Length: 240
Image (tube, rainbow, N blue to C red):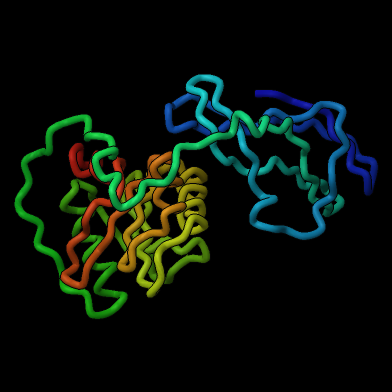
């Protein structure tokens, strides 16, 4: 873990900032490389793009987006910690999977466990969609799947041991931002995140979820979830 000295430009208070490390999908701890001796920037307003930085995993070479390092000074100023940029020539990413790329989906690592045929719950309302997703997670082997009494600001619909799940019923494809928000919530809770969507997913959302290892399922009005990406195939294969 890298530590750097930070001085707040507002109150001149000295801090020592330790860069947080996050697990890369390959399993290696990965942290944004901070720029020593670079001035910190007080954060006056937020934009979605500025909240993320591109980081290269030293173990596998993968490029991913990680939260922009920040420090909250006791004086009330939020300080953005400068990060060493990754050269644009190194930030190439695999193209998003198109309609004809189904054959490129990674194969599950193990054979499917023996399970009875899943019996879905027909979807007429949002509550039905969440209930069918809960049944499906129990079918996968998750125990004590519960629904929060009220939907939280983090938009978590279901919880189980080691898992949080979100069920999107909006009449639009689930977005990249939806995927990244779920991933951050799962990361903060040290759990696995799973997404269900009635309208499917934007191409960028599918590509990002593949890289982050987030299982995506599309649910039709019969309540039957269908895997959309490799992590979903693998979850079906291995179970909870």
